[in-house]
Image (cartoon, rainbow, N blue to C red; front, side, top):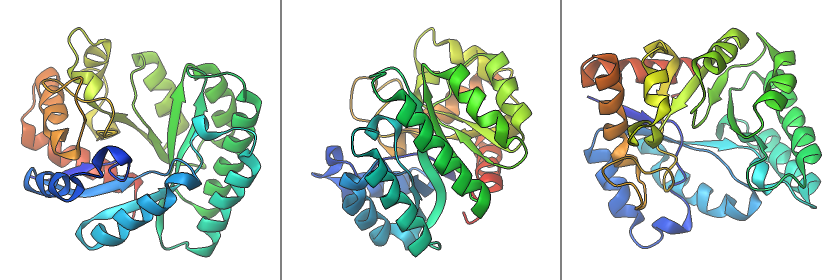
Length: 259
């Protein structure tokens, strides 16, 4: 039984003390592929280093500008993204993590939208999937992304929305929803929503070191914990763990063509 972690930041400082051990635990738990989305240029060296060390084992890179990294120098950061994608087209499996985030700050929302559109345009032109981050900006996100209906594929990362929001995503064509540790939280509303989402539209993700699933909530997340996410999905959908693992891997491979 194998799993694909479609969203993990294992290159972040939280793993600097034991990254090799964490990666080995991940492999032993059945994870055979990791997608490493980008944040901004300050994380690039660490991201690249991890990819270079584990690319033969199943590590893949995304390249994009995270919305919370959109600030005064956003144009320079965006140019870094475009330069990387143009210079090393075979290095990157997706454009991401990109999107809109009005939770932490609304100061640069206009610039976030401009950066998002530029990256969506690039992905559509190059036929690359996108990894979408959206927090507290649902309507603005749909206002932007509806123009790309049928022209883009990708994943709405860390999905915790309603069934209606899932249906709006599904109507775009070619998009999956990334389900992570929140589905295991006590009284989590997303657990009930997942019951109504077709399994073929779900991919697994940890977002490690963030959003740690129960029973480790509050501690550092890691890719080996993806099994707990899969087990919860299996429970709410009355399926076997093997069925969830197989279907979510197929879903991931349908989006990220080079997996």
